[in-house]
Length: 545
Image (tube, rainbow, N blue to C red):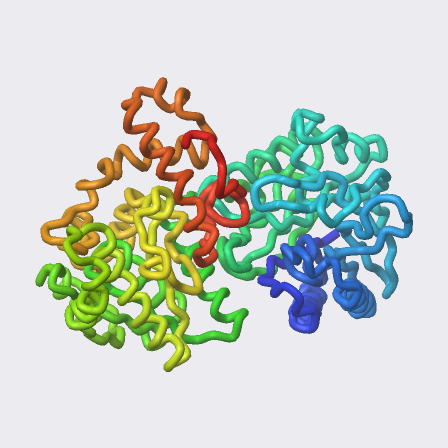
């Protein structure tokens, strides 16, 4: 038996586009004499469809997509993920299903049993869990058909669930496992995914074909990395990351377990490629082409500009330098050098006159009051207004350049430098931004060295440095990581050796700035806990306040 894996980039709600892409893959698999072709979870409609699932018309279109694919299941079986209706009145209206199509019919449907409802997942909002499990019999083989999370409760060891689908299927003596997944990227997920697949094949003694999405859906990146794993735990093949791919495998070869092809992963390379894909698909799937951002000469805007240029093409990225009287000459020059290194169109719009106009306008109200954060924020908001004006006039989408450290502690101006349609590095801590800059420069200087080595500064007052009001980032980021990703409370973090006053101050800053994060652009997710849909904190709360 020959089995094809089609790792594709789907578009939520684009049923015609998704089906056409699958039909093309079916023809390619047929040409290579495949007996079965497998697509990923909810591939007819894209993942995650979220509240689109509440529209009857959306479900009707998904059913029509399955019917079109069934017609193509002639001489080849097609395995595809799609929502299906629950005929029982009690419970949720839908199942998250895997369809096994053969001989132009629906041979069998297996529903997903384990419905993740944590972090970015909210599947129990929409779907009823499966309660029946049956292998698919096709061409003399018995196939365990599973959907994503169904393989993540190995031997009932995951306390989130009370059933293990593979334990239910094993008495029926399957020959191999097919798993249709939509597994979002974070920089640890590839290793975790391999561990889970390996644990399954070693426990059950049969190979697995694991099929993942490859593409971005707003915040979420699906990195591909689909797997074919032999029963001995060898990775027979690991598909490319962040790109579409179709490959065909001989089941008997996979069973022999003689090949091991695991790829080496580099954290910064993975983050780089994930963000580039995220920007590219955000623009492409929304029908946008051009981006604009403020380029300050600092490292955050520099890294953002490079990633945007690599995603969209240099000709589609415009940058605006907006120096004030507080901007250093070297920052302006660094910004110009970067724009010229990348071949970007750039404009220089000085804001000092506008800034003084605001001060004069507000002089009656501010009379006798000292310079403070008000005047700093005025500059940021002037810059935001200029970027939004150019966005409206030229049809460019503004990219937000704030990093995760700044977003965490509120070190950004709402309606100023926090504006934008997409937050490019909002899930990358400041220390990681420096690492990313070094990675970008690995083959030669693109980001000016001075941008990387100079002390971080917002340059909103004379001789300002970030460290004037924030701890050094190598300390702050470690505290933030423990609180945000690891969900450690203040005492637990203090016990790790951090200064108590510093911990309490940092955590308080995170909590009191929640209102800002609720109003900012979607953040491309590269960690296990990003700001946005996967982190739901109350704006008004007493904890740590």
